[in-house]
Image (cartoon, rainbow, N blue to C red):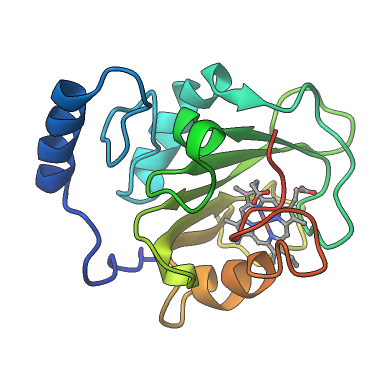
Amino acid sequence: MTATPPPAGARSSAANAAALAAVACACACAPASDADDPSIVPPLAGQEATEAWLAEGHHLAWTCEPAPRAPLALSPHGRARACANPVAVALGPTRVDASYVLELFEGAAAAPAGYGVQRRTLDGEGGDAWYWYMRVPPGSATIHDATGLAADGWGFGDGPAATYCTPCHQRAGDGQPGAAFVFVVP
Ligand code: HEC
């Protein structure tokens, strides 16, 4: 499965680095937005980079639900635990670089068997404002390839990020918990 290219207007790494430097100089109080700092945001570079980043465990220092729990009504993700980055916690899901990781658990296992990731890269109310990534456990009913990959890219075009993740997540806040594509705020 190939990653969806970023939508027009998505920030480049160079722009991110420049913006991060600007933020760091301008204000040391708010979480850096528009950042490339791996302790704050997941990468936007596809499966290998995302898996390496997850293996490094950066999200474990974010704000997380205390323990895995049963899925909410709409959720196809099974037993799960959500974590939110400092941008999301301080500024909410409408802020660029707000990011979330969902740990996916199989059966009663204590270690995650898969992960969902969403990171906002643009202002706006469409799924294309978000980068979506998911690797599911082998037995998952969510459609995936041989490596477990279920989505990797932005929510536009014809990939699963657009056709699967986006339509359900846009219901957050619409008769469902949450807001702006995010159901759970730990
Ligand atoms: C049919 C609805 C549905 C689909 C499809 C879906 N999700 Fe979710 N997702 C949920 C619900 C409901 C939650 C709330 C947490 C829970 O109960 O697990 C959630 C939680 C999450 C979270 C934690 C942050 C949040 O928004 O609450 C991430 C990250 C996530 N999903 C990623 C994805 C990705 C990536 C895809 C596509 C591969 C996807 N989801 C597809 C319903 C859905």
